[in-house]
Image (cartoon, rainbow, N blue to C red):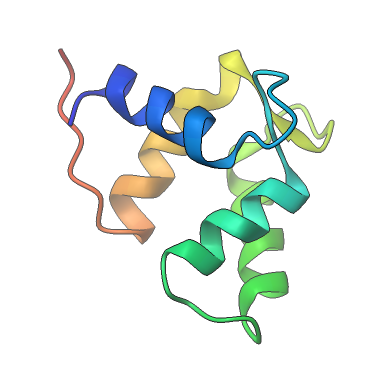
Length: 83
């Protein structure tokens, strides 16, 4: 999948309020979706947000989607190609 395809999939699947950003609560759903379970989701969510949300506003926005792609490749085993 390409970076743009991943971005569109993430927004469609996990951007519950359709604001174009992924919030901490939406990240929890993403982590649950990847099969890590409820117990580890709070810790993984914190680690995920710390790695990806570089401006610290609690959301993954347009400028941070590159960080999200890098995290997904390294930690979630997602294969992403740059188109």
